[in-house]
Length: 216
Image 1 (cartoon, rainbow, N blue to C red):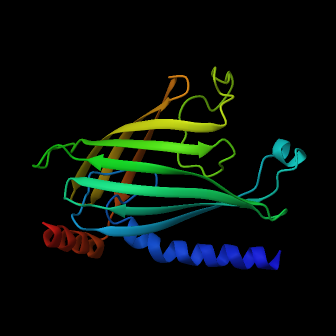
Image 2 (cartoon, rainbow, N blue to C red; image 1 turned 45 degrees about the horizontal axis):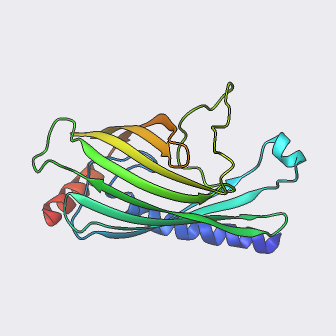
């Protein structure tokens, strides 16, 4: 257990070091804004420590540490490309597992800034059904929920698309994402959304403006 705790502390420290720079382009963790900076290269490590529900505990599932490693690069000031891998480790049994990967792209079709700055997003997910890292929720989260036909597939292959609407103002940013997730095994599409409100201090706004000027 001491080794597991040390590992969690180390993962948390690494996440802290990289998250501050990785949030520079979006400002959020699960909600995206329209900000894209040409030439920016980022590494973000996201970590969750989860205590399962009572039902899952009775089925033998213990506390686990799930992680996602994300590498992002912006070849232009309108396009971002990302590659992500994820996995988890059960802290009680010591069992670890690599569960899959994701490819992602965001594209701003407009050169000029608009009031809502629409940005297009697409992501391909190839994940083991045992994956435990949670990014967002779409579809049913309460009964009635029934597994879709074809869910007996060994892996989850999904195309996720988003319409990102984002607006900057004098105090920060407000963003809304409409999310569609289509299961490639059966064609079923689930819907969801994410929203965020980002308030920036005067010093942070100055730094953001300087970075935009530098990349511009």
